[in-house]
Length: 119
Image (cartoon, rainbow, N blue to C red; front, side, top):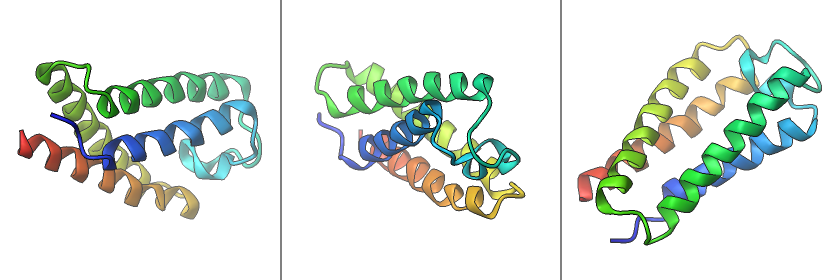
């Protein structure tokens, strides 16, 4: 069964954002607590590069018909957990820009949960 496009699209956007951070785009206020304005330090850019790959892999797996139903459920559960944790972490951030990501995280958690319920 094909997954609705909502979760893969949300993951793709997260992947693109993290890839931009890894490439040195000066969006530090929108990530990692918002405490580093401008370009992130090398350690956090590496973290963003890894996160970008993980998000992209999740999006590709959910958009594909290849994963087994069991694997798809595990990926969706991971997205629910990631979205739930991201909601809390972003909501308590001191950065007003980063707090906006809590809405994105809620959307990821909800769409993934809804997809799990369909199965």
